[in-house]
Amino acid sequence: MIRYGVIGTNFITEWFVEAGQATNDFKLTAVYSRTEERAKEFAQKHGAKHTFTQLEDMAASHEIDAVYIASPTALHAEQAILCMQHGKHVLCEKPIASHDKEVADMIQTAEKYGVVLMEAVKNTALPNFKNLREAIGKIAPIRRIVTNYCQYSSRYDAYKEGNVLNAFKPELSNGSIMDIGLYCLYPIIDLFGKPENVQATGIMLESGVDGEGTVILTYPEMEGVAMYSKITNSRLPSEIQGENGTVVIDHIQTLSDIRIYYRDGSEEIISEDQIKPTMTYEIEAFHKRISGQLTDDEINSLSTSLSTSQVMTEARDQLKVRFPADQSR
Image (cartoon, rainbow, N blue to C red):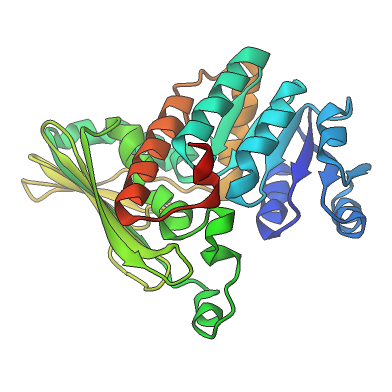
């Protein structure tokens, strides 16, 4: 049984606890919040015995084995490093940090203290992503992958009325590429590695973050195109184009329906029903990594997290999206 402390008491943490309870070895033991009232409210709701309003106290606690971090991105690196320095495994919500230097520092800390660090990217931990990885060789050589995730933010109307909520605040290291773009970029880099070149375009908002964007990743014999937005919707699927066929993915964030359309006109369904809550699969992968049943390079590897952060950092530099956290680069 892995005893968890959680940082953050928002709806994402609610989903995480529900997904964790669908596994056989998850126990919520502690809750951290800046306010004691909110910590106790969340703990009581989910059966946690301990609450903390000082993060170092929870990090040092002998009542937990691992920490799930779902605070604003700007806080991820500092909080994760503190927990790892106290010997705690860390599952950190995506994006794992504000920029690539922070990610490198987090990886170095994990190695120094002998703990597991993993980025909680849910789509690449799904069973259908494994099916996708195993199937793309059937249409090789691959020439292009296009990933698409455009979802009009429920907070954008408030933004347009002058109320800038967290989703559009640069001081929290937020914005379109950080929140939505990662779902598009991470799978490309997971499948094909770090690109040779990055070219980014996008629409900037007055708050200082990007509202939407496109990143082109250049490889020796193929290219990747990631399209994402928090200010528009899209109904386009994602696809992988090979010389012998095309893989069509209904939604890159859930991968619920994946089909190969071969050049000879035949079709193959390679997706399966994913019956568990989507976050359950990343939690199971994290637990297997802790127990040694799964190596770092199998699901959501640290090298993929670092390469993705490097690409996102470069893209932000090109777009001139600057966060206060970038001062540490």
